[in-house]
Each structure stands twice: as structure tokens, then as C-alpha cells.
Length: 393
Ligand SMILES: *Cc1c(COP(=O)(O)O)cnc(C)c1O
Image (cartoon, rainbow, N blue to C red; front, side, top):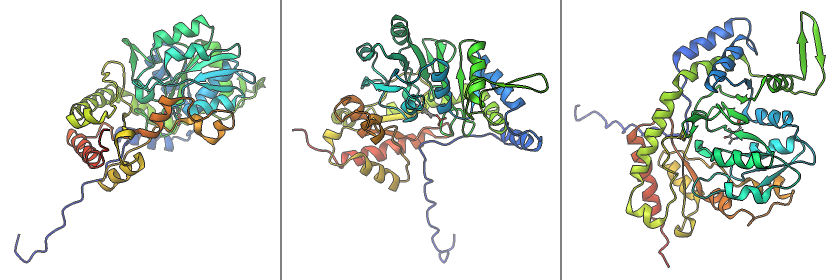
């Protein structure tokens, strides 16, 4: 380079989002084919996707939907949950988990989380059961499964239905069995940020063909067709069907599942190694459970030690953003949203969920992330925390 050449600016380090979908070229070509085929809404691609999902779920019936929210609402309807009924769930989830309970006219009843797993604490479920309780909606936050043995023992003892909100745990397992391959209703989401995506979409694993038939009815206006021209409507359904365009994306995603899960586990391991420092121990920064057998590591989340920091989470996020690193909040404790406060839930009711809700932070994790990216995220974060420590009293 000659002396007269102006110095080229250093290429800026690219911004790291906290999640990024990966769609391969074969899938993009497949979607184009569907678009040209003359049939773009629910059709052969949805049927093929459902068949693959059923295979995944050990042969159980599976029906595809246009969201993982709709799947749960419909599971509640099939279970006969409605006005006058209560459904037990966690306050630390995407608000869809409790909104669907309100949608069918029932009352969500929250119980606090276990601060280690960040999931619904099985020890607290039974105290919340009343004569009005009909179901439990457990959530596998970040892909770490709720203890299915304890959950189903409680459900059986009290004759409750379970709608597993497994939106984040496609690819996770419980003691060697895939989530979805056993249990009662299991609801998955294929939202753009989930491990496997259809852009928007979801599916419901059901117990038998009768339930699957009801799911089809609720999914599309309650309609049952027979022969060439027969049509009957004997229940009120909605509009929850998946398109063939979306199903084709899902079909292209499924073959990558095992690699995606393995890669996420590897990156989570790298995060935990990088976080193994004296500062982290001294601050009491809370790391996720080091589970590499069950969890699909849908997210890598830390919980900031608010009592040891002079800055709050929003400021940490702003500083990470300024350093080119995206972070997320999953989630604020939902019983404190106005809709739920109006139903009587108050601050102080669930201290563990509230603490997590104020301090939980999702760090970048997706298959294309590199170990160098992980190192950069951890170094940047620890520099911010080190500069804003409150001295121990
Ligand atoms: C994504 C998600 C949902 C909702 O899924 P959609 O497909 O976006 O409707 C529900 N619960 C949890 C825990 C989720 O992460």
C-alpha cells in the first residue's frame, strides 16, 4: 500500500443479534416451487409436515397450526377448559402462555418458579390446586424441560390435564425420551426465533384420532367435510391453519434439528466455560443449569445480580448494544402486566419470578455463532459489570 493511499477504516465488527434463523438454499428453492405450484395455503405440504412431526413424536397424532399460541388455545378447548375453571402456570414466560387461558374464559393461576431452573416449581403446584383447577401449563423456559416425572405424578393424582407449552423445547428430551413423544397435549411453536421455524407456525401433539379430529375442526371454522359436497359445522372453530408455504420451510428445517441442537449445546458449553471466572463467582451472576442431555438450549440466559450492580438491566443492554451485541429480555414476570394486575395479581406474590423478570438477560445464541463471538460477548459483558460493581457491605 503506497503512502498516499488513505487509510481504509477498519471494517466494523458486524452486529450480533441474539437470535437468527438459518434457512438453507434447498428450502428457499422448495418454497419457490410451492409458490409456483398453484396451491399455497394448507395442502400437501402441511400433510407432509404433519407426517414428519408425527414421526418425531413417536407416532402420536400431530396437527400443524399458524402459531404456537393457537395450538394451546385449541388444546384448552379440546380439554373442555372454560369459564369457571382455573389453569396453573408459570409467571415467567411469553405472555401467550396465560393469555390463552383468558381467551377460553378460564382463570390463570400462577405459582412461583424455581430460581435455579427458572421453570414452574413443582413443589408449589399442589398448594395452588382448587376444586376449579382443570389443567397445568408448564413451560420449558430456554428449552430446559420441567421435571416431567413430578409434573405427571401431580396431574395424575389430581386428575388434571397437561398442556405442555413446549414452544421453546423442540429437540429437547426428558431422561432419554423426546419432548412430544409422551405426555398429554404438547404444543410447539415454529416462530422465527425458535430452534426450528416456519416463520410463524406451531403444532400440537395429541393423544388420539378423536382429539386430532377436534383439532382440525377448531383450526378451521369447525367445518367437517364429507364426500364431494358434504359440509357440517357442529362447533365454533377459528382460523388457525398453517400455509403450505410455511410448511415447506418447516420440512426444510427438520433435517437440521439434530445438528442445530448439538451446535447450540456446544456453544452453551463455551459460554459456561467463559463465565467460569472469579468475578462471576464474586458477583453471584446466575448462570443457566449446565444440562447438555435434556435441554435444546433454545436460549442462553443469565440473571444479573441487581444487589451488586450500580446499573440496571436496561443500561447493561444499552452498553452491549453500543458494543455491537444484541441481547433480549425473556421475560418480564407476566402477573405484573396490567391485564393480570386487574385480575388481582400483585407485586411481591412471586419473588423468584419477579427477580428473574427484572434481571434475566438473553445473550446471542444461534448455530452460526462462533466461539470467538461467545468470547467477545462474555468479555464485553464482564467489562461492563466489573465497571459497575457495588462493593459488598
Ligand atoms: C414462542 C412462544 C409461544 C408462542 O408461540 P407463537 O408461535 O409465537 O404463537 C408460547 N410460549 C412460549 C414459551 C414461547 O416461547
